[in-house]
Image (cartoon, rainbow, N blue to C red):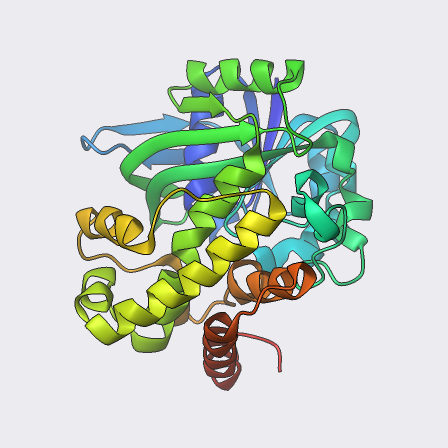
Length: 327
């Protein structure tokens, strides 16, 4: 299999190493110091036990140089998608599978949902349809990552904990290509599960990220400090109840209460969310895919979201003031 990782960050590197271990020819789209490091040193991964593994990869900042792939893994953050849409065409042939390994609501999310929102465009994620035009829906496989990874240096990933990946067809049900992809990734050492309804898994993961990410970005606090504050925890629970109601109307019910999820988050200890790390690094924030999309889905399903709206307004204004979100 010829596979290309578009987004040579922590998750992209984790998946790239698995594909290399499975015997795939791995290529990566990268820029700047990451491109230099990949060309000089290859891809490196430090596993949770401290073992360091290495894979030779071909890296380029020009997708046309890499050519048509069997698999393209999109491991970028949502603000980068418009740029990806403009540049991805040389990688995608008629039989190419595009695996989305991203946080938040993807542009294809409503294809497999129920109710009045079914099949509509999530405009907060994709305003003009360019992403859908560049990446045909029929070639997309959805992914949900349950692994904590970070970058030790450009091209060098540290895997902290978790090794799980859920994949599934946007339209639901099993398929030959998800079965084949799962087999390859398992050969590379990843715990892969094929989801009968990947939107359900995306929504459940978002149920936690929707609040913890923006609140940590606003306050600079780690997740333990956030949950220790009763007033903040109560606000988080109110936002989660709104998202839970939206999920019911999309046909994506959640059978837990916010306190159940808080207990799981507490077990992870004191950690900085990815959005807080992006604030500290001065990078664009994933506000649209994580928060604005939930506000929009509330409107589409006729669900009141006053707490979500307040959170969206606050984190958006903070990001605009820092130049991390368009005014």
